[in-house]
Image (tube, rainbow, N blue to C red):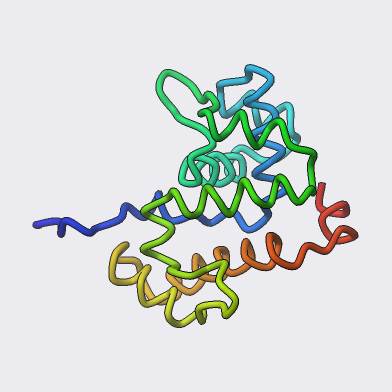
Length: 161
């Protein structure tokens, strides 16, 4: 099978809905924990979901994985911001803008008018070659990021920690 040049691996299409849980994982990596199982143990998040969170952090450019997980320069920047702060949300928006993958999947995600779930799902189907149901699920993830960044609900975020 010939893979098109614009193909995006399915694992590079985020499926971690909760950015505060992604942040929690980033903070643990910032403490020097580089093993996914240890991150799961320290955060009390299931290993499967930690994998989703680490993947989202990687796609956003906050972590890198070589022999283990470590923070990038952008990861250190977000880890230095207060949780649930405007500075944290700015870091996330900037990370999105730097991510070619995310810009291709959800162009204009943080613009004044949100792209529709259908438009994002179409891009995910096209570039990621995922089923429609999976593409819609991943599109919903990206739209949930938009809501959390542009219209944070402190009471909801605090409850999810």
